[in-house]
Image (cartoon, rainbow, N blue to C red; front, side, top):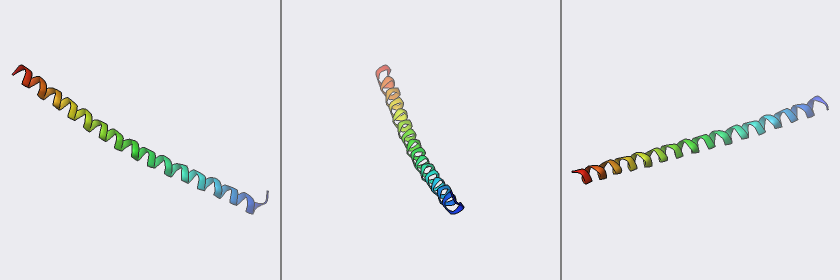
Length: 58
């Protein structure tokens, strides 16, 4: 392989790696948002359960 072809091959790998890195970052951001949403649901559920227990015992 001559240097020009090798250089293009290296650039292609770098581009592929950059695309994969970008995809991974986007997926991490999406997962973080899902964790936030799940935490909100759990907190809401815990709060409602606590209020329900107070009204039953009070």
